[in-house]
Structures are given as C-alpha cells and as structure tokens.
Length: 97
Image 1 (cartoon, rainbow, N blue to C red):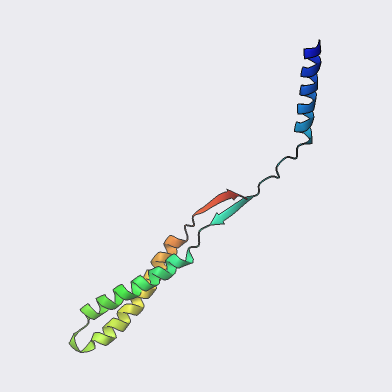
Image 2: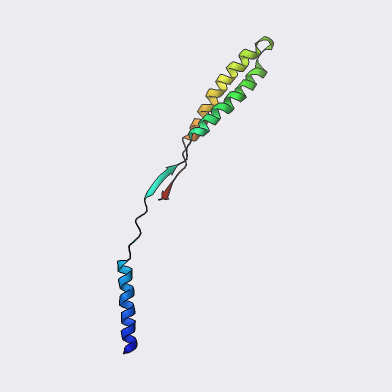
C-alpha cells in the first residue's frame, strides 16, 4: 500500500511538472535566398576581359585599340546577359529561426 501511494505521488508530481513546463516557442520558417547579383557582375567582368582579348587578336594591324574597346564592350554585354540568365535560378531554402 505504501509503495502504491509513493508511486501515485511521483506520477502526479511528474505529470504536473510536464503540464507546467513552458513549451518552446514555434520556430518561424523563413525563406532564405542566395544573393545572385555577384554572379551577374562577375560575368560582366569576365566577358569584358575575354571580349577585349578576342577583339585585339581579331582586329587588323592599325586598329588594335579600337578592336580591343569594341570587343570589351560586346563581351561585357554578352557576359552580363549570360550570367544574368543563370542568376535568375535562385537557390532558396527554408530555415527555422
């Protein structure tokens, strides 16, 4: 009989502790996306350098400077557009905070 009373007391106090314990606050789910502007800017720089080199190689003897400038401009635009298309595919995920 005594053991049953002790067991009932332990059960009642542990159940009361569970009810009185505060529950952790719900974690908020937040959508986090990776910044993709850097990729577009890197594409512009790489395109400008590659276009400048290609323009210098393709240009005639007396127009190396003009070929480099035009090639760099065209390469920058092309590199930016290519990188921008790839950058549209954002990498997003949910985090609990």
